[in-house]
Length: 412
Image (cartoon, rainbow, N blue to C red; front, side):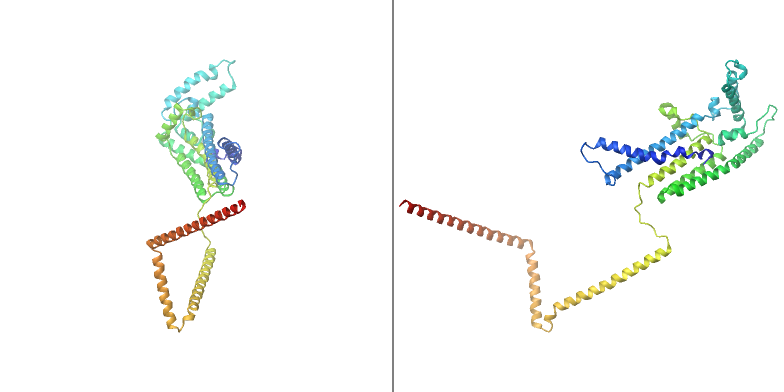
């Protein structure tokens, strides 16, 4: 949330239409390649179309986020800083080496060293920048202000003179503290505007699930804590792991053309501020692809009481209905036994019949009994088929005899 974080919204318009446009375009090409000609393509709303759309959209959003990071790094490299202008290392170079470097560059770019035919406005401007860079980096308090607040603070720094006395460590500390307070007072309005802008953007223009809002506000808080830490601490270099990774990428990959040679605190804050808004939009667009399946929580006390009252009423109605059904079932059972009421002999016969039925049911359900019954049925079926075949053959023989007699009569 540094001053450069309040970038024009034009630079972020790509998030509003490019991911959706690229997703639909890539999905159409993907179906043309993977689905045979003449076969129907998945239509919007189907499970396959929705699944592929989610996957492609996540890939597109991730690539666009990486592009935003690469663009931020390239912009930092393109803007440059005093260290790259003097071609010195920000972590190991001493004041003596900076002054020596300035003398070598002054011998080449000083207006008095260049003929009038070769002198240009750019040359004069370059020499002024070189001198300003040397004066800023050799003054401890000015160097601290520059590396933490960027070039915008340089114009507000008091310029040293040739007769300026050498500052003591205590004077340097006091001047550094004064510069930090002055820079913070200068940036407070922009901080307030940026915070309000991000909060309004997250509240009204980036709707998302509760989990998405949590991560978005966590990113905003982390960005603010990181900026506060970098502005109030003298960070000599990046963490060793990150510095090693960046050195490897600069040396052995094609990313060296976009990666800056080093990252000062104010440059880290510039990149972080750009990524904060981009990550907010990224999380907002990804979270809507995965709707929450959890039931909605009841937070309103009145709604909870109403829900409990409805539940109690439904349970009471269910209890009353079950009691009524139980009574009706008992009544029907008693009606079935009404003819046997007062008839002891008939009741005894009914009991014996029920016992025999239960015994026969158990016997008939036994596997061996079922197998025996099946064999008897097969034997009877075989006998019936044989008898039917014999009857058919007898009828055919009788028909042959009748035909033979009829032919003899015709012959006679």
